[in-house]
Picture 1: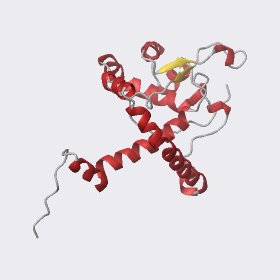
Picture 2: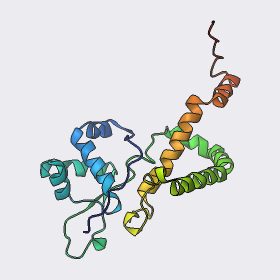
Picture 3: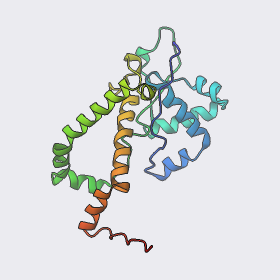
Picture 4: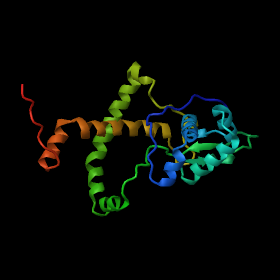
Length: 207
């Protein structure tokens, strides 16, 4: 398969939802493999390529890939879509960071059943899409930002979900950073918390 430019990484963590995930991700070799898989994007890599690039025994690679597959961190690239003559399995990173936040299921169900998520989506969908479009345009036009744009083209589209993981992670990172600043640094949100008795007014320092 033709060598291509590595995909960009925007999120630097792996949300953990179980003791089993924590055990697998506690190994340095697993982190190295996941980072390599993410960089290789939609067409993935073979176990041999991982072993050679990271200087890891094939037995370790296969064992780790088996666990990552079971935890749905990766999937196998469809054999019918591989290059002619290529027989080895190719492994693709499957939503390693975005979409894996562990929200309490009872809380998530309540949000859906009571219509709160529908309300939030109705109010925020259009403003968020407009803001993302504006910021994406800035990244496309401003030279210092262009290097951060996700790559385009069919080779970067996931055969499983039909979208670019790299692009989704890019927009996910934009929204996460925005939410982080809003919730932890903005005076407006602090005043919102104070209003609902979840924060206290900061005392002014005496001069």
